[in-house]
Length: 242
Image (cartoon, rainbow, N blue to C red; front, side, top):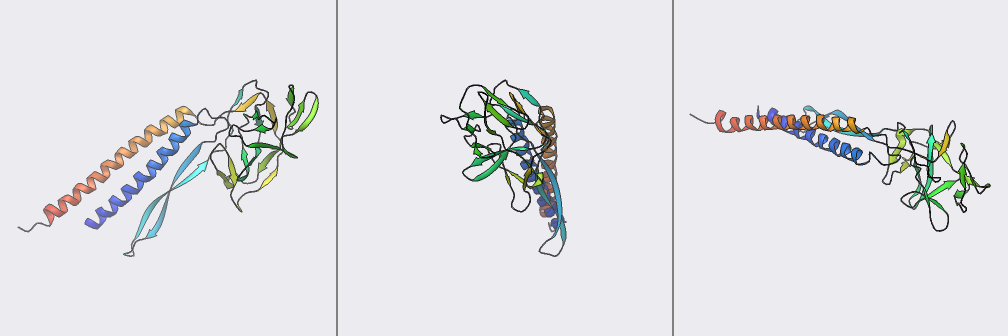
């Protein structure tokens, strides 16, 4: 009985740790509910069978984090340097760590007229970093940029052949997981000027998930407390000699 209760304590603890990680993910989603282009994270609970030192099989708890790439709503800003992709695709960004991808199109210019992300990374066009020098900026549906009626390059919008092969980084960026995804030419998209794609986090859904998870965490605490009390009785009562 002691061994069984011991395993119950272990599995209860593993479950609570997994629930704590899930709570962290929900908190992160809620913190980015107003972040342009943010893609929420979902967590799935996995169970795997493995063998203990005594040769007995038991079930372990594990988590798998999945990025939800569902498109967020189009939000009008009327800022000529805000762009949103209607359809599939990502903006291509140059960072010190290499090429990265994002759906967040809230860009700005530096003192040299280069188009930058909010974190200061270069936005790439077909020929490299885009430079905009002028006042009247307009963009066509295919990403072609015109400044004061003069062509000024074209936004490089690309597709990723396997979205599950994208790894999330900070600053609303994604990178390609080695050997799991590759960049392809984007088709069937339209770039909208004066719009940004909003976060795909739904506030009500995340709050509901948080409340459900909180109740489940409390229930697991009660289970662990019960196992601990049973062990206490086994040590203090069952094993006592009369």
